[in-house]
Length: 386
Ligand code: PLP
Image 1: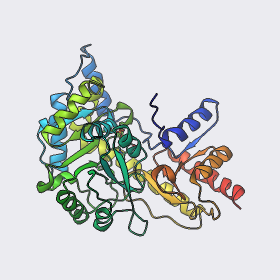
Image 2 (image 1 turned 90 degrees about the vertical axis):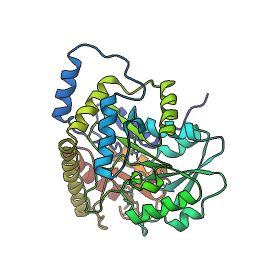
Image 3 (image 1 turned 135 degrees about the vertical axis):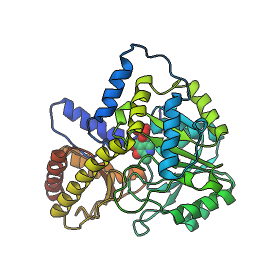
């Protein structure tokens, strides 16, 4: 039996869910799920579309209207140049990532992954018969890799550079110049670039979001993964996208045809209404996440001695145990286990993202949960780690 390792976020989340089922209140900083009501225009749109009573198998590549809207979204907002035939609608961005890795990798091919990384990348690469190669980054360098660090990890077996800007867990966003340098290196070493851009719509500072698909000279090697989940507050609807060269998209489509068939028909309609109203829906989510981020940071900084900076994007804060006032422990798994047992506060251990001595908070929960959870966390740390 080939059982993949469960994702660490899912594991902590299931401990949290078990406690909730037992009637306990859990303060869940682990989930990375914007707890928001789906935007009204999406709900109303889907209700209208379902009234005719039919829900046939959708086309494997996605509903034509959705593919056109998705291409326009990236072309208008991120300077891309995709045609609808370069778009595949998938069951969440997660499946787009896995499908791309699955079809592109041959046994033993290496995938270069900047670390800290999103928890699912290494396992997905291994399931697709590839080998993850991690490129460490540091807080001092804003958790970004450099041309030098990329170059020093490239080998004859390197096949894909897997980038994630804006990043989960660190919130770092690569600039135009930084991406250009990395893409130039990818080109000169014949690497494909799998660019996970699922947080592109949640940038809070003035730094503009730059898509890897905005560089015309690199479009033949870039595959962009996008999603409605976080940009439009639609995690449960499970709609994502792969954008890229037509030949690659056709191959991903064949893989999808033999596995999931397509994203659910009703969910694709929800995505159509989200994209038709993308400005309103995204500002609704972004505004709410910004309120929660600011509440998270101000509460945190009032409670803990070492202040943190407000994350510039996404929905996460990546914080060292040391800055939480925990001096003698580096084991993030042990720390998170002790904290959830003592206070019902769920955090994700940094090691799940490849970085020991850190934990990740998702600040996407409700405001009450953020405030109460942080107070309980502080109390638990003072008791457990005096
Ligand atoms: N990529 C990153 C970096 C993520 O954090 C997530 C979800 O948390 C995904 C991809 C997948 O998102 P979804 O499958 O919900 O579109």
